[in-house]
Image (cartoon, rainbow, N blue to C red; front, side):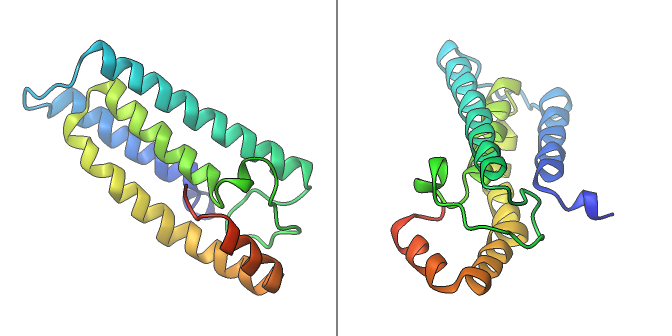
Length: 149
């Protein structure tokens, strides 16, 4: 059951809910427009790029990308210079873009719900683990780099 408690699984569940909502419960609401399609593509693309860039940093630093595992290093380079959580930011961008692409207007309310799930299930426990493991280094990093943007 541990594989269920991974961010991609949560994101996939939310995307599935949005797809079902768009198909069966649209209530005649639509944001379909070329600008919305462009925004959807940009968000999905940005999300994928953020996730890939962050994954490359994990690989480069030879530390785990799996949440709830002890990290071997504190990554402060690449996209981690701009955000302490670029993968979760990428998950949110990807989900929001897919909601627009699916034209799942009612599912826009799920964006802050996914944000809350990611923050409470993953971000806060991970940052607590980093704080205990890397103490002063994490404190300096947290002062100069924002949690999200």
